[in-house]
Image 1: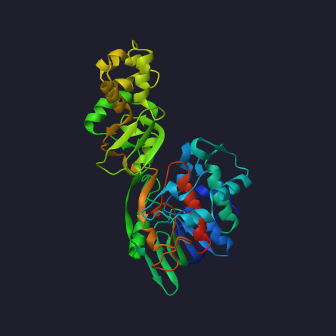
Image 2 (image 1 turned 30 degrees about the vertical axis):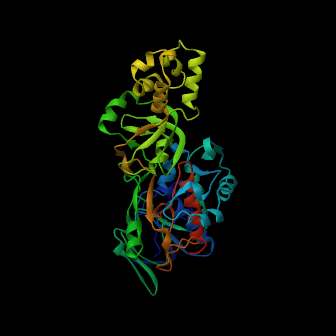
Image 3 (image 1 turned 90 degrees about the horizontal axis):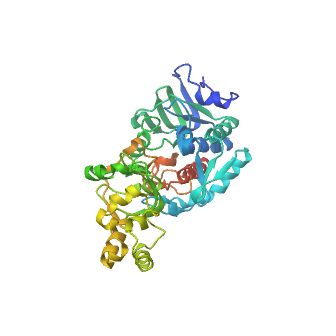
Length: 420
């Protein structure tokens, strides 16, 4: 008994159907993939193209849940500009091989060949014009055409449920036992715990002797210290163009003030590089060298009040939060160089120490993961256990906001699919 196959079923039904019964028999396959994720589904189709019998199992009720949730339901599936510089890792050169062997252009070609219309947004980000479901359907159709079996509602509770012996991997699940020659861990990270997160990938890695680079939430809003939260509460809903940086990275994007703290692309980006207790530096006018400009305006319009001069550059509420009311109401001719320099500092070098982050609950990715020094950069295979592969978010490779994490999923899944 080989259990439920999805071959020949409509893709939408395939994605949502539940198993009718628990399977007790031993099920053998060439490749077992843990996780019906972006990387797992692409890897499955690639391995099956090579004549492998492939089974994908996932504890969730639906395949590709992160795909459906991404990009506001439009899926930011890749970026026009992809390089190793767009990724964070303790081993920064590791991702180069996979990214160069299956590029953004390779995935764009697949999307276009299926007739999926896409659009370019800011910074080369590519989104579906219609729906994220189109990307998931593409992957599921590829799996169906290649005879891949997908079994949902199938969980592996502990790493001890997996053994390796002369016949390969022996895996105990909530719906029976599996035996496979190769095992691919595509289980993702810890982000979005309510829908699809699981630490099982890290536990499997540790069970086979792999080190784990400490994990933390990435691409996540930051919260504020109590006093800053009280002081900045009136700014909730305001978004401004800004540059946010620390000693390791900097990003020029929108910053959004929320009732909990700070969000928006600039904050999500820097959050992956931020550590608890550290300060960030915020430039609220990144396109302007403010001090020389203020000195020039003092010469041109000395009677103008600072409030009126800056009102066209930043929202009134934000100005009142950052600059003393007396300075705002004084005309420029009464502002000395030292005063203008202090004002420029307040707007362009705002040193703010966040209280924390919103955590994995709202994080888009997990920073850290399986140490890549113990994986082949070409195939993603373990150097400790032949036949064991780690791909996607479970690996210590984290992309910037903007489609980079999906591209890592495609590239790492493709690379493992050529070898497993």
